[in-house]
Image 1 (spheres, one colour):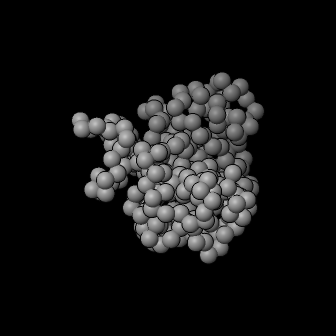
Image 2 (cartoon, one colour):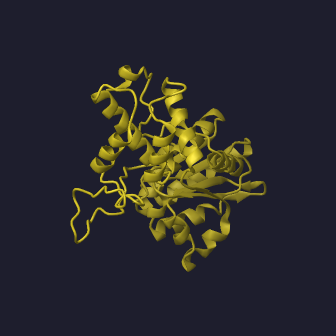
Image 3 (cartoon, one colour):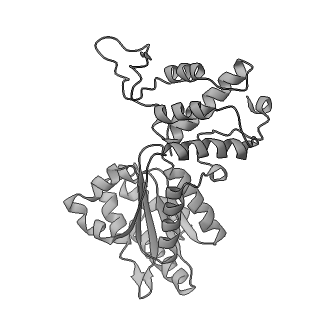
Length: 300
């Protein structure tokens, strides 16, 4: 809606995980490098964790682009609330296995044959599982057993588990100690520092077609960082709403007053918000059920 007004080629703060807008902070560069290294070296199990909205799914999209460019075959499980039977069906479908997809036995035989064939050709196969913290114990055990597929040169299937910090806690459970021992690489994503938040906003504005942007002043960016806690998805949501507000008010400079209104509309609470007098319109003296509940959307 506001792209023509600001001269953008595309919206700078879409919530969808677009690798074209991937901000390469030092921690994101390191995590992506670890993922690629783990796959190339056939390390087997790799875990990527991070809080909601820190960019895990975007990271996986970048990895998928790399795998496509390197002609590496991969299966991507995007819905982790599945049964063991559904898990094998999804793998069979993604890897186009020539077998009865509803038969676990046939899927395993076909998968093993495919992985051995590709390994003999010097090719690597990858299984990526997003939202892995939601996986049932039974499915996690099936994933562990897939890690037993190997030859003398390494694991036949490289398995990447991505999820929220609950995944780390789940992997610490005594009944998953065998799986935990097989994890050779761990990567984690944390919220941005102020410097990263400023660079993130400026980079996305530049990629959208506005280098040297003046819509968000350094002071306003500092306030955005404070209220979002450096969570990229929250930064996107707030900045998108601020651009829309600027368009509606026919101005090309966002203000703290606009930020206050956007935060109220998003029901966003942050450290010190009550001190500044930003009392939620949904709260009362007994306390609001929305307090300390930030605005989130699905996916990373």
